[in-house]
Image (cartoon, rainbow, N blue to C red):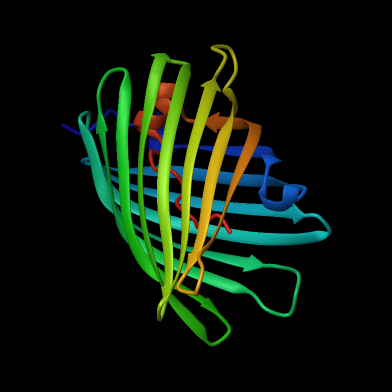
Length: 244
């Protein structure tokens, strides 16, 4: 059966975070900060619409980049599972006379138990830079484990592949996050570790590199009373944008 609606049928959050690489190829000094927001509209009878918006500013030594992204999720949710479709777009402005646009759509699902949630996504789209286009394939799988209603541990893995002719760019990510929301305030503190493996193949020799990042931030929620209620009544889907 459909879940009980949040207050007014609307729930969401806004968050800010900062991350810095502790190990990067060539010991490049890199860090980034992000602003993100998501809101979920419960239309009744289990039907939902989730909207995401985000902005990221990253620095690589003396180079600063800006990226913008947004997504729409239309789905059905009850007490046991959620399933639906998504469309998203992202744009990277690397600070030079060009930009990269990435468009993606696909399927997503989640399975709910009392103390954990399993979720996954499959998508396909196009990445474009000027007149050059490439296929974008992605898959993601994650788990959210609740120690209490307000303490949660997240495990997220994803694989993105950008392919053009015989050249493939693979981006593999593993992220571990701890979340804590005080009972008296609708604010979640989160911190974690992200590992990224990048590989460029199709040339005489493949090029690859690994990056480890530590991150943390604050999430301000509305329309929910606990961290678990935020997920079960509000935005359930993670952001799947390509981490440029």
